[in-house]
Length: 214
Image (cartoon, rainbow, N blue to C red):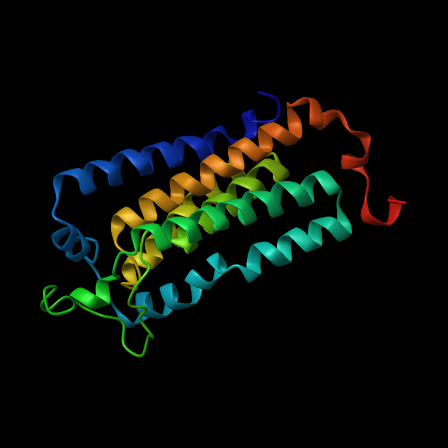
């Protein structure tokens, strides 16, 4: 598949991430796993994850997509916009279909687990994680656009860390970020194929900049 060699490190990291988390989810009780995902907490890590998690907000991929439209080309814009936009739609549909509660609703059962102070915790619509989905779709698109294996590796790690931040902050359970990562990566992979390998990919206007379109 043309153009995917550079993002093989990203896909490898996602595959390892999926296998490890998938095994943990299948073999461990949900609440026990949530407690186990908090082996270390501190004022520094609380502050870091509170700030870092916002890179998975919808405004970040939206800003990146608009920047690509303005300063690069239509193909790049569509890769970022459709990867993040379509995966977000899938997530919102699934959230309402499954309607799972978030960790906060199990605070009593979670016992003396550490919670980040001063954080507004959501209560419902936990599965899957929208932040994890956006993190993986956005980082996949960036890895493909940059086209360098070392950056693909770094972006893969960044996506994993962003997804984990949702568990650290107790906004989601582990299965939420596991499936979010799968939705984001799969959607971005399909959009990348469509824009680079399908018959549609040969349309010349895809490589034009916004100001060249008439």
